[in-house]
Image (cartoon, rainbow, N blue to C red; front, side, top):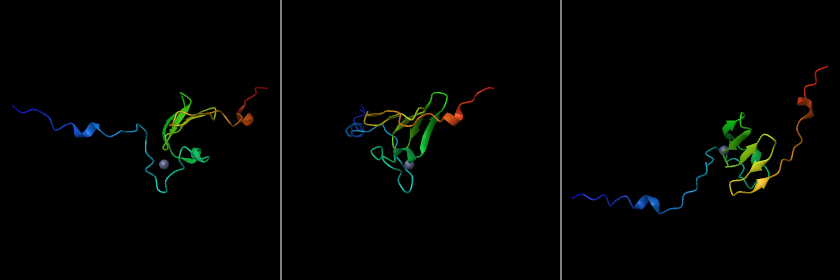
Amino acid sequence: MNTESSRTTATTSQRKNLPMCQHQPTCPSADSTDREAAHLVAHHPEQGWSLLCNGVLHFEDTGELLPDGRVIAPHRPLDPGNVVTAA
Ligand SMILES: [Zn+2]
């Protein structure tokens, strides 16, 4: 009988389920105040969020969710120049 006992090696290491930045030079980390300068890896304007390559979820209202679970409150006022007023 041929038992499949050789598959036990792949499950031992802890894997983080985060996207890794593969840009050169490396983008700012999620801990950096410059984190928003990282590249977009996913953009869902219809849902109001973007995912940056450093693992930060960036929301349309400028709020952010860091990969370690911290929440950054929205820190930029909505652009008043975007308001369309019909005369
Ligand atoms: Zn990057």
